[in-house]
Image 1 (cartoon, rainbow, N blue to C red):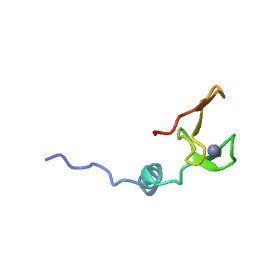
Image 2: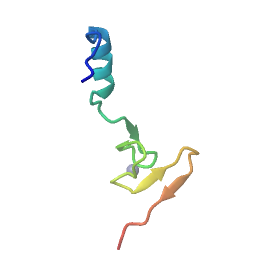
Image 3: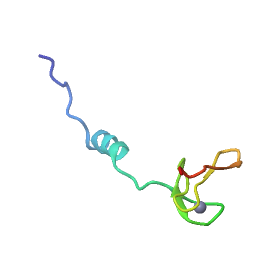
Length: 63
Ligand SMILES: [Zn+2]
């Protein structure tokens, strides 16, 4: 069975774990109501979704 030739260095191990680490989602402000919303998500308060081209699309709530 193949065995590792070298012990993984602390830097290698730590940088690998740092890439896997959980980070809080980036919150953006809703242009309509100012509520903080995670990116690529419609605002839960006013249902506004802003695309990269800054065009506002309002999604109708399911009746
Ligand atoms: Zn909003």
